[in-house]
Length: 323
Image (cartoon, rainbow, N blue to C red):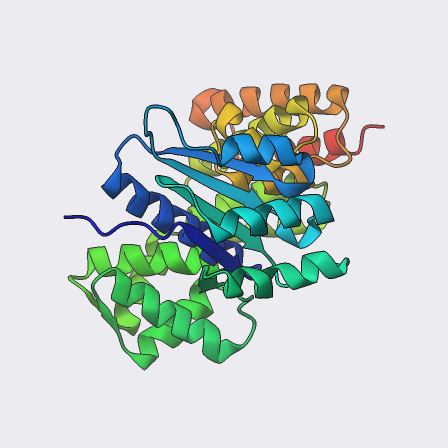
């Protein structure tokens, strides 16, 4: 029989990878108890007390529900009181997850985590990982979670080649365990890194869509030196432009709310929102034409694929600068 999910969860901290994992884990546990359990995410600043009461009211049909309150460090007095009142007598079949960075300007917001702990909330710590030792521990834990082991040389090589982004480290750790029968050493990491050369295409795209001419050209030259296929760079550039255009056309909003409509994970929406700054509709239209033509160019239309890529990157950068 599946363990009953915790009815009240306080996810404390602002390390996005850990926060999202805590939410996914809680949702998975709730769905083990009730496969039809629904997920609702809402920012506390978008709620009124009656709306919160409705979200946390038991269903007539006893359907399970997971309610995630985001940005609780911005909570106002009325919602805080409503949350704490509910915490004293949680409803059956409902899992309430409160996401709080641990900070807050108002006293009521700062006091909320302590009050929820007193009310019996299960706490998941998700503090920002900044120290190298903590990051290394995170990687070792990721490898263990995937069912593998990593030696010190492999760990050092992984951080050196992948970087310090936790999302990328987690993905690499999982893939390495899968590809190497659970044993991750330096040689395995070096092989993995060589096999991931295509990521440089996304490095080119990320720099081009924010108008970084020098950075994009440097990344492109590196990709060419590594022998990254032209079509991979072209595809990455096209995806980068299309993603920015899609997010820009959707307007501003909460990445978590927009994610479902756009068919993207929240982190990708958030990143594209940042990349979309400075673009005009005319500039995006021009960039879309550039990447559409580039696809044909690198597949044989252009006499010189290297030149076609360089010209396309420069034109995307120029399109970003269109006022």
